[in-house]
Amino acid sequence: MLYFNFINETNRKVQKSNLMQLVDKTYVVMKSYVDKKLKGLDGQFDCIIVDDKTIHKINKEHRHKDKPTDVITFAYLEVTDWETVEEGLVVGDIFISIDTAERQAKEKGHSLKREIEILFVHGVLHALGFDHNNDEEEAEMEGWAKKILD
Image (tube, rainbow, N blue to C red; front, side, top):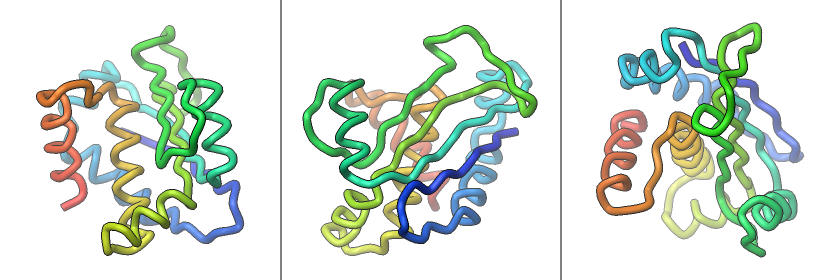
């Protein structure tokens, strides 16, 4: 099973329950993949809602990109020893900029809630080891995201 901690470092309201539903749906849609990836253990990750100033700092420090971005995921399964906590394996940390999400929602013509859901699922998929370095990887990642978000 997948679990997450929700931390909102902004004064903006974000519904944790919407994200919890997406975590549950991710597990249902990807159960065999997740169970294999986590070797049958539970997986835990953090979702942290931040502002553009904070994500800009994270992006500059860790990705050497001097600008804010929408979502940054630190995926731990591929780069560290298997660390366990009471709830299971530490899968990753997902940082979402609410400021960038709001701008993108307006540009795309949908709600902020929907944009945060899209970014959250994107982050979860990165935490589980997916990437989009080429067309094939991107298609696979988008395919999973579509199944989870629909």
